[in-house]
Image (cartoon, rainbow, N blue to C red; front, side, top):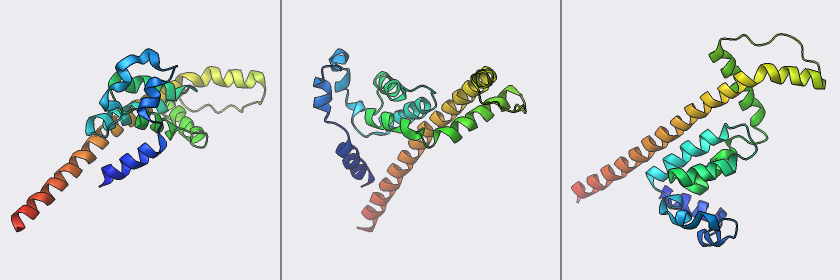
Length: 177
């Protein structure tokens, strides 16, 4: 039942697959968009979509959705789910998540947090970026890998557990009859 509800919800909001395949800017992809894993809900494509979408969400670039779409095509992950999961980092969640990435990078590098006061000027911003980019990017990389792995293995586990539960329910109904 949850699979049908999820399928209806996804199909309600995504464009028709045939429209996308015929779109003039996507024709260069050829038959790549015809891969059933890009559109169907199965354990492999959904778990891979979680991995792709969550790792791309931690990329501090404005083109995350495009990167997720290309990665979904390459890894044959569910395309709509992968692109949607990129919005884990959105304008509301970016500041605390990226600050957490920065703090994570500082911790892994073994550096203390800077204590000097920040001056709001072009010079102050450039000095701050010069000291912050390494821990920030390292933190984004580490959190991207961790959340991607957690998404992939978590969805695999939940999907398998759901299937075994349904199978056990069917077996118990057969034994009662």
